Length: 395
Image (tube, rainbow, N blue to C red; front, side, top):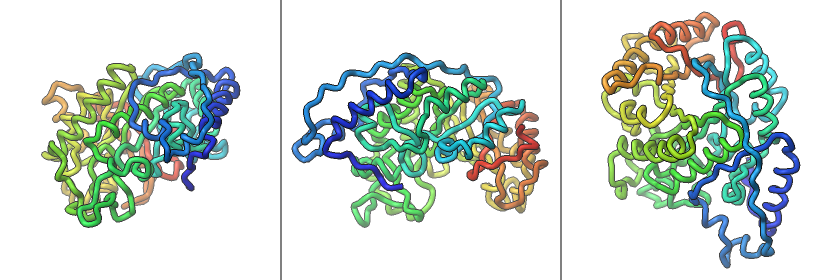
């Protein structure tokens, strides 16, 4: 999508948007839950060269909407994923609502910030709003969340953290840099990654999470909390990092734990590579189960059988053995958690409902759920990038 740029009348626009937010949302009230973080301060503070400096000096009153109602985390959580694009259309959400009308699911995961680096909706936070990070993919977020809550559905918001092509357009210094070019490093698909050690990036993520929670999301799910895994990794300038990757990622989680869980009391989960459950190191991306688990309510390993290399756990094509791959992976992860006295119920795996490596039949989708239950875990999240799911299993 084309990036929206702030106009020379941004001060007035923000005021109008705020008025519309209060007047237009009606009964769909919001809680103000923003803290002192100001990672985008340079965007919201007028300078001589900033479009904001040309804006009339308008005093915008602080908007303090009434608090939203949140649903307590179910036990267990059983959810499907919906992209921001799907969540923003009635036709797209039709299949999701149909699934949620059954008795197998009680939650949905919706993109807050996706691979574009943009939000799926307009934020209420004035600093985020001024940055242009918002979109209108979900035109009326409060109405959507209200409808889901009315059906007793727990709403999890997913944030892609360090893979982000938008934030570097505002703060290029906070992107990983290429040694060769001196400009932001890109992976083979052209993706940019943010510096995992930047407090400004941490606080930017926390600000987005706080805004999302204030708009009704019940839990924040952090994805792409890692260093890049593909491309010319030796071209990444790591000369100014003061810690190794696994402890850099640990520091990030410690900070969001303190602010989101400790200060704001927001339920928090984190996605990690499936192989980290059995790997003895951080796999070169900074993800180590034992260092992440203490800082979140749930760890969500992406144990899609199709994503395991041929030969993993002795299987020529792991995708054809969903029960065995899930069971073996989770068993390894449980052992790691028990070693640091964390119960296996902190694991909430992502399972596969898409064709890759094999054609996934209803029996293969069910086999993953069965394997998860057999190791003593009842919670799971189901992923299909197309948001089309096997109704006979999930409804």
